[in-house]
Length: 140
Image (cartoon, rainbow, N blue to C red; front, side):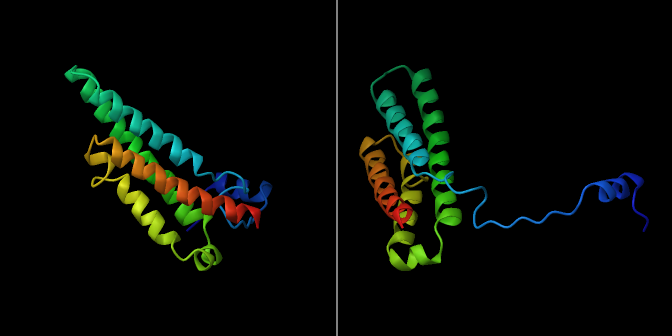
């Protein structure tokens, strides 16, 4: 099959470039603070939900809480799957379990499924445990 003229032109003037990295972007973009900030927002939505009788406000608070809970999971997944490498899991054998517990606390069985502020506090504690390991790995 013949290549389109435009494709041939691009190949002629744009050299092939290969880049290799151990992460998605240069180091320094990962930070558990992103997950913590969203988890704090989840907790605030729960507190505001629980403090009002306004059904419209409650509905909005629930929607935002669930969206932010999902963002917590996404930020944790990025750390878990992109930042942490096999040597980290060897040095910190409980790391997989910490991430598993934290993402579950941000899921349907956790902050997505309740307005119990104690559950949000548990999530924040797990994120803090992950952050402690994260900052230890940054010292090395």
